[in-house]
Length: 318
Image 1: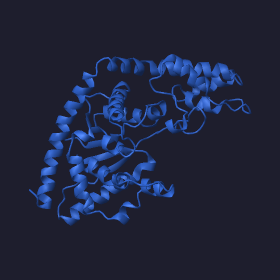
Image 2: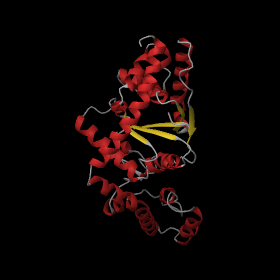
Image 3: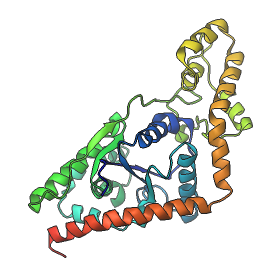
Image 4: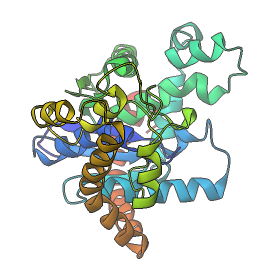
């Protein structure tokens, strides 16, 4: 293992990337990976995605797009181990071992289960059990930190509880207890309608939108005619320009919503152009993505195999 503390993060390939994804989480993960402080293991959480996606072609396409998207946004394969969860069998093997020491009442406390139950949804075993797969994802690599938003701390608590229970049950110190890394300045990005930006609300600005798509999205931002400053426009604008500059601009063009939207369009387009160019370049040669994932798989397999050998010895099957 690396001498640096390990950082683990999983990303589900379940939707088109938009600027809410970028400013809400992607940018912070990219910056964190560049510090040199950690050894990052970042994986495409395709097995987690199976809870909501049962379409083979869509899974392949979404996985490709997600990896291209993160690379275009600044993740450097030289700084991280980037791989698919499904390429490393130890994730599901360790999940099963954790299942055998985990009770159903404990899993019923998970937020995702409670949410699904409250909506009277039929709950799949995968949804019910996902905290154990997530614990395996984290503990397999001896993660020191896991970047999460404030509302996702429970994921890390489940991993810590599971590590402690395994260590106690098998009288070992095999698993380290990970800490949540609460990402600073995680933006809640408003959508074009003022609600939180989300594909399910149909209010997103795609991260790799071309100029025409960007224009259509920006011009559709809902404005409040009762105020002198269009708050939804301003809230998005301050993601790409300093509030000192914006204060003067919005005072100067008070009430001129069309002009302010046009200025936001220019600033967004300028900010996103390098991402778009990198994404288009990656689309031309899919073998680049394949090579990166193959190398990531090799390293993740080596680390996980060593860990699983210790686990098997601890439980008495090796």
